[in-house]
Image 1: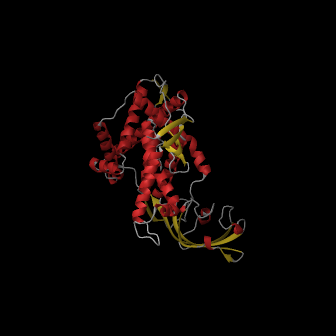
Image 2: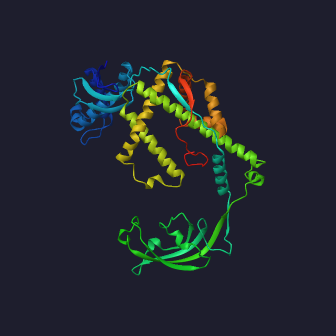
Image 3: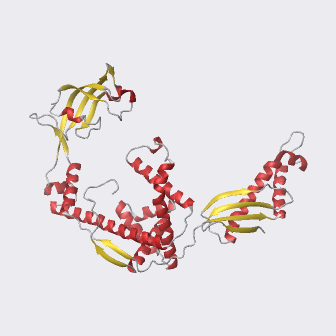
Amino acid sequence: MTNIQVEHLSDVKKKVTFEVPQDRVQEVVGAQYKDLKRTAQIKGFRKGKVPLNILRSYFKGKVEEDVARQLIEETFKPGLDEQSITLVSVVSIDPETLEEGKPFKYIAEIEVPPQIEAKDYEGLKLTKYIRSATEEQIEERLQNLRQRNSRLSPIPESRGVTKGDHVVVDIKAETDGELIRDLTVTDYHLELGRDFYLPDFDAMFEGLRPDEKKQFTKIIPDNFPRKNLVGKTATFDVHLKEAKERILPELDDDFAKDLGEFETLDQLKQEIRQDIQNLLDMQSKKELEDQIIDALIEKNSFEVPESMVEHQIDNVMNRSMQSLAAQGIDPRRLPAPTDAQRDRVRPSAERAVKAALILKAISDKEKVEVSDEELQARIEERAGKMGVSPDYLKDQLEQNNMLEDVRAELREDKTYTLIQERAEITEGEPPSEQSLGKESEEE
């Protein structure tokens, strides 16, 4: 029977010493050499007839390494279970040299979850900020829809190009008689006013008409990649080949019908109002939960395992990479996150870990449970938003081992609700307003 000694290094770290009895060590060593005797092929000996002392001279180091690995594998997890230790991560495992005829000892430093005695989560004083969708927000959303459903049409012959027009141009750039290849383009598309080509460059096209040409000079800006050209005066020969203006649809019932779901503009506005209100309500809900977490962390001080914080940082970084991929950027072409970038994320990551731990402690104490019916209802709700069948979504969650994540999310939601039901909540004006009329990438 393995002898186990546990030393508490901190609230979340332990040093565990395992000592495997010498008879078990000898048993595994003997089994290793027995297998080797059957399979080893050594010149001068028939297979299966190699003497033990010869086997030892050839394979002693490998046998000791393999035996140590086997003994650690067969005693580590069962030993922690025997000691009722919940493992978060293994910091290190340091085995001593294995010797036949002697016990085998190894020392593991591990991280464990903190023991949290959830307290002071009743009677919290919270403020619920009340917001209502405004006409300005609705109008902003409508204008976004107009932009999204606009069309491009050739500009009138009566005017030249101006800010907001879409143009196709040829640009030839030179400095000191040398062609600047990085700035010389053919059939280049520009939306005037955005200055994607160079800062303050688009204004040079103002008033030009299709098929007109123009020459002008500009100083190469400081952020230009070819540093040897920075500060030099470049000559640009431009040819405006095509120019179109954006035509916005009228805001009327026909516009609403063209979107495919509405009969009148009023119906569209009502849908927009409800959508914005839902976002505002979600914002208020998140603010309440943030207040709860701030209060709970202040009232329940505990250490968190570093590996859990690092794992949370990894999750944040991975979500950032997925966001870039969704925008068409290949994350593999980007450099790995630096230590400085990870450190900037660390405080919020540590807060998220503490929030999850304290909420779990409260839900355990209050015996918060999630029924299969509640889980199924959440899957159906999520499937409806995604436009897939509940059975399909459930299968996907099960295949990716994420079904219990949904249950944990529901349990956390119910814990937030329990805390709010026992809190003193007052309604108030929000400290600052942020426009939700414009759809953003985060939404």
